[in-house]
Image (cartoon, rainbow, N blue to C red; front, top):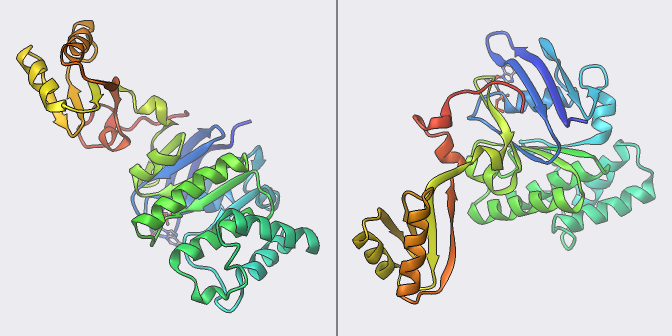
Length: 310
Ligand code: ADP
């Protein structure tokens, strides 16, 4: 069963078209929802949760109609909103128990579940403190914990790294990845940063101005380039000199060389021959993949819109 299926999904506010005929077919996994601010990411998530009605078009989540079966959708889906929604005078434990109880979980099971999810997000020690004294990173983690409280099959995370410093971002991204794997659930995570999505997601939905720009598995989108990345333990410069003497086009990036023409056996053999001649320990030699950022640079081959299911 697809995770999410939309057909011609359009949302108009009085003056703005937030979503414009979005047709999607998304398979389970950790999915990145990317687009600049105002692209329509939050609107899409709210429609999928059944919290906002579409103007036209349909949306299904885990086979449920988001407009007609919103309550049922919210039983099987967890939601981490973008903005702060935490009562400052409550402890994380009380808040997560409350959220679990609201989803119909009995009191003792709700307490157990709250402990489990707060431990998972790394807040077990601090769970009885009032959240008003929490850092931004801790607040983001409570928001993630409450989204997990009712044991959902799918999580929507709206800009989970918002407001975090680089270390906080790293920790949150690791946590998102672990959550997907440890709980065995699918995650849709919105972000305006392609590098974040590339790091943790297997699938990608790119929207801009309410329209679908691209969707698919990241491994398929970031295809191999004709550049060979060659890493040696030491003496990358000597190797580069030898390859340049032999007529190859080489760039040195620290311990790594990038050699053009990686599609040809001749280039491959020439590199191996030079590595053996210089007696260098070869760490790795592989075709470099394009990064998502390269893919979406203006003028890149694949940067034009490719509407359609994926
Ligand atoms: P994103 O999450 O990608 O930043 P949003 O879905 O929040 O984008 O917004 C998409 C567009 O819809 C923006 O132009 C925004 O101003 C507009 N919008 C969102 N919610 C409302 C609303 N309740 N009323 C009017 N316009 C809205």
